[in-house]
Length: 480
Image (cartoon, rainbow, N blue to C red):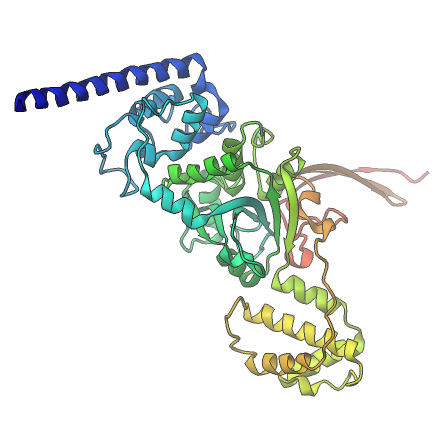
């Protein structure tokens, strides 16, 4: 009797494996028939991104990202090995592969599994779906309901940030009213650097000397880093993606994990990698095809803005410097003197230029003083001031005595929005003449900032600095 029971169990196992093997072969045949390996969405999942000098290969070099030995250059072989991996028994693990838990291929590559299950219409009666606890916790903790494409304005104090930066904001479904940004997360791609000199950074950045990696951090880190720490405006473009598209995008972050991609300043950067993520989520988008030679963050913003139906709404988050600048612009000469008196004396009581009965003037001066303190102290949330404690407390006390609202600042300065600016590449012709000479100036090259209205990029103080290549020639013009 015992022998019969063991034999029956063994027969059942063999039968199950035979059925699984048969269905695995069916799926591989179906994938070939549908030419899935040639589809853009599958190749984007493997980070095959068409660039003029990087064709027919993945941007990821780590062999652990692939199941096939030639997966980096052969998307069809990787597809077959991926499908085969999905049929591995639950207890089969490859302990050399990160992440450390849930290493079954269905859990290591949830984006691939989700995509192929939809594309090939998996029959879960014939392929067992493995429970991936880490993935479930990831989805539950983030609770994403929508995403925004965020542009951080250029920062001339850092060579890594002169052309701006882009990342994704993950909006929680259950965000509380008041300040939901504190609960959200952000996904970005950036170079892993140390304290390189400008020359070293330029050389490594241009020629791919830095490794790049995707990161997931609380969104308020970005607010503190960009809005307050570096005084950079944030422009948010909420995107119109379905729940299924959002899930595939987030799963792709699990797929790539900590695998590094060589960072190239002009093309394999935050802009190109995030556009590729959006193309994974929605294969109908053609966002990376417009950039043959280079792609910078501001150009990527214009690309998503032009994509029909992609941008749902926009939001502007002014930096501490921008808020102060706008408050200061509202002041008349007496109110500016009042501000100077308060800052010089470290007290709101020192304001004598504006009469105490001029509530409007006092409000504008107090508000400007508070924004100035926030800018200089780089305050966020419950962070306390260090150098201007007495001034801030004094101004807050004085302001609380006037129960009138402050002037609302501009909610979305359209003329300074990154989607309103010019492309990185510009070509132009200017002429000038005097009595004896004429000048014709032809300019071409890359420029990331301009002060020409209305296409003014949101860089603090509207600096005109940039990368420009000018070619000029003159011709003599005799006086008639």
